Amino acid sequence: MSNRGLTAVMAVLLLAVVGLTPAKAQDKQPPLRTGVDGTFAPHAFPKLGGGIQGFNVDLFTEVAKRMHRDITIDSVSFSTLIPGMESGRYDFVAAPTTVTKERAEHMLFTAGYIWTAYQFGIKKGSAPITGWADLKGKAVSVNKGTPYETLSKKMGQEIGFEVQAYDTQPDATQAVLSGRAYATLGGNTTIVYGASKNPMFIADLELKETRAHWATPVPLSNPKLRMQIQDALDCMKKDGSLVKLSEKWFGRVPPPDALERTITPGYGVPGMPNYDPTPHELHCG
Image (cartoon, rainbow, N blue to C red; front, side):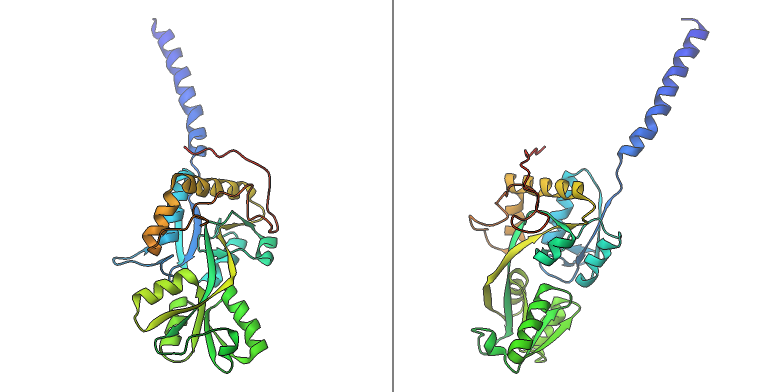
């Protein structure tokens, strides 16, 4: 080949490389941005040496991996998470978020990945709670900005008890241990976990009628992200990864009807606003 021919070939190759480089760069998506309540053990809490650990940290680190995305997880107060997503600071909320009709009207939820129920925690030696009426004239502590606060305030007005809202669930638990509140109302997983770590704190009455989905919210404007996150979660259900994470952090094997095992049809929570019933085939790499 002549020098002129070789130069022409090199020029073509150079143009091809130059033409491909921007496309490859564009294929690299930015990290997913999300947050958790970093004091909500065992879902997210500080670890020795810095950073956070917990069920939801492991869960969404794996979800991002399956989506071929990096992820940044902020540790903040729960009450700032949904406003942060609505303002564009976060792509979705990684903290366990209870699916309610009101919330589902304003954001898109994936299918649930774990069941939650409301449960009271009390100080050792206190009389067990048999129902809301036992709280008349007492005080109940809750984590600010959660459904536990909403329900407690409603019942407090009906029955006649004080509701104290704190920035974190550990603060709400400490209010019980210090005697400022008679009981705290929170999610069953965190109440049971708290009782396992402090012999003076007792997991008490669980409100069976409050069983609900914990799922992942994304903005109404991003149905594609909901699909991608739910597909990753469903694949984790299918291959048993979600069950293993649950065993690791909650210390019990999920029962047969657990959401860690259940793949529901469509996208979202059946029966809730913005549920998409469209059938879809699950592709797990």
